[in-house]
Figure 1 (cartoon, rainbow, N blue to C red):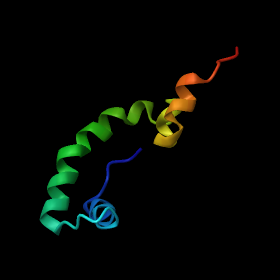
Figure 2 (cartoon, rainbow, N blue to C red; figure 1 turned 180 degrees about the horizontal axis):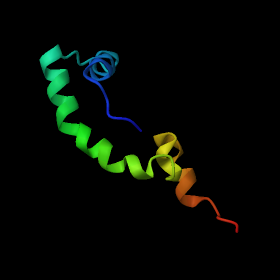
Figure 3 (cartoon, helix red, strand yellow; figure 1 turned 180 degrees about the vertical axis):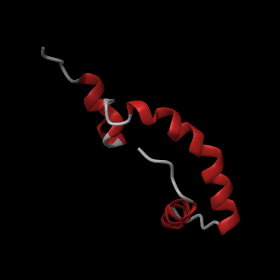
Figure 4 (tube, rainbow, N blue to C red; figure 1 turned 45 degrees about the horizontal axis):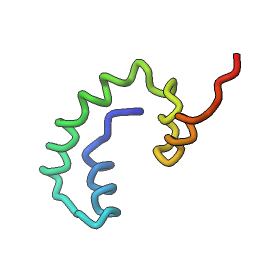
Length: 65
């Protein structure tokens, strides 16, 4: 889980059908970047980190030790 770049945000927004200009993509990156940095220490350790569609599976999976 890395901080999204303005380029990545612009591409994602275009795929979603909501194109944004460079300035807006930069503002979005700057506003959500700290949240990504805050979770960097535990990135990859949470079951739902892989893909949101597997969240329900991760929450209902039985843990074996």
